[in-house]
Image (cartoon, rainbow, N blue to C red; front, side, top):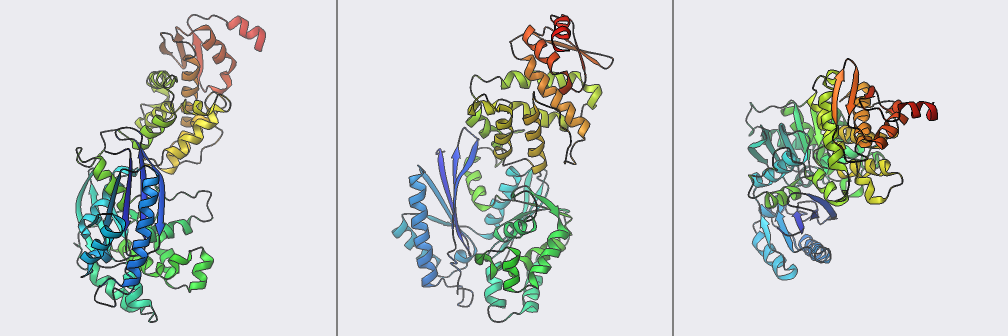
Length: 489
């Protein structure tokens, strides 16, 4: 597969391009995104689905620009898909030919189930949960998929979309009841037994709503954010009853003002239909799904077990070949196992420690000064896929406190402050113990960790920093305890 891959998605509302850079076999990151509000479906729903000349012209101009950007970035492969508005159009073949002739771009028109699959594939591989129902509210249609046991089980496509509703029921009509009846009719085709407490929200309308809900919070992240379903339902109801001026005051951009009511109506109705309790917003969707299908074509659409593409990518980009991260990871996990009486073999704690220790040296790529701070920063922003915001914050806190301080508080519901201090102490201790290569052994004697084989410099650092290690330590071959007491106490 090419090192730089571009994926273009021609939706009813916008044409979007994502450019992905691969750092290794499965490691990758999003290099650049472009969006153009082409509104290719404009006027089509009132004209028997036919694509109109002006929207086609806008789309051709945008696609030509996308191709130029992709090639300037070194992209050797450009994948392009078109969804609802194009596949529903009787004249879609004429449009595809124009794209080929004017943009030298081959468009693949995908059906509703394939569109649902791509969104589900992105959720399955790039979110921190993989059990639930994905909902992708688009401009012309909405897609749903059932995710169970790490697999995409069932796919559904409904002919209800934000732009479709806008043109049929809101442009100069304000027919709210008609729109609600139209949605209800579409939902009646879904199997009645399909319910899920967990929903994955995909698509521009859901991302826009999520950003406004989070506007007053300290985070600008959408991907992986988890909120109560009722929060979305209540906010969607507020959107539906608001004027355009109020929507602007809320913070919606001009490109969403005329279509967000339709998107909100659809999303709220689907959440209620599935009896949802919580929603995880996804910043990844069809474009990521197209890329992943190509990347994982020989692996049944899934990354290898316990593999995370963002972790791999961050290590590929920032972990120096001569860094000590592997030694630190090895000793951190050994210490964790030996200290089992303090954490009762909690596998989740071990997962967080494992990730943090692997990333413990990435700050070296920016230099020695403030290395811990830089490691935390790079980890927080690099672990885009497969980690929740809370997990990223925990890893950032551990890396920033390594060898510096004990955390004083935790804002996370995932682990207690005492466990966070324990992980921080283990990471700090592993860092000091690997100052010089040595053969180390550990043994718990009552509540004290006894270390054998620690070199002189390691003992000096540990004794100097006992206040940032949250458990007692002794050395079986004490080399400087008396000197330490004389000089430092």
